[in-house]
Image (cartoon, rainbow, N blue to C red; front, top):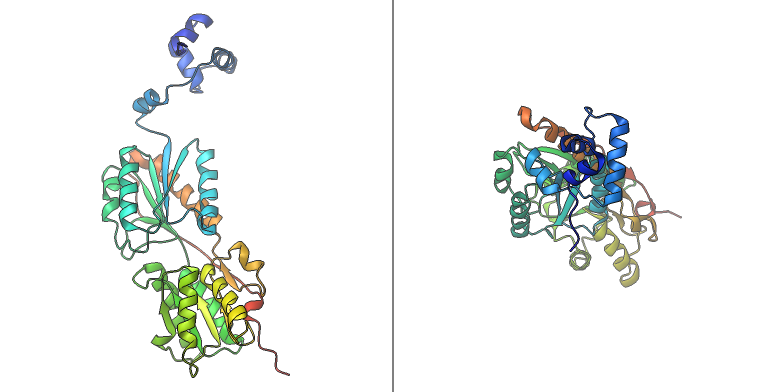
Length: 345
């Protein structure tokens, strides 16, 4: 059985105190550069591995943060995680990534596990069903900082990094109106969710500012999957006297599914008959024909900014500065062929 090399073994071989070895391996300024280099070289040669558990117990830190997202596979969240990990790596932290699959019960289960694993901070994009932060109290009560990103809930006093969602759908709807569209439907998410409520408000405000009456029946709330979008589109088209000339979709997944369905399975074409706009600038939105008009949410920036905020709190943890902060990322409208003006001969 191979013996685990300890700092005492290194100290004996090097002929120095074990406390000096420990400081050298921890890059303490109390140890000179030459000694550090000698100690680290010998540690590598002898196969020394630092006992992280013992170190964590001494510092009361695990050098780990938790990240919880609804779906890791979604382009937005994979990009956001990339931004998060970049900052965490620079800070010398490991990242535990979990997905709730948009299930509140699963989210609670994950959070309990992360809490028991003594993470130093938490980044979370809550599920659509998350209505308050009660299940996050165990973190705040133990001075473990939490930052929400992308999604949040009303009256939350937790720090967050979010997109200007209301502005984003306002921009899309206003663009469609300027293309001559007047009967604009909105394919929405769960309107009990703060984020989707904000996006619907942006849609309404754009109609109002352009003198177009808001019709409640034009807003269809669905689960945001491709199949659900096609079902909703079929239902909309059943009323031949009330066919929309444009649809604002709350994500690209639904918008892309509708474009494919309309062009391949109906008499309606995009954008000649019905203009379609999405939300999130998925990679496929630039590949499909016609290209999808959408909003770039800058997910990498959201992830990076939320991670930077979290580490500010982690560093200030013991000074008690865990005050609530909000950073709002500005959207960018990406105009492509799916909303082009109808050509009149």
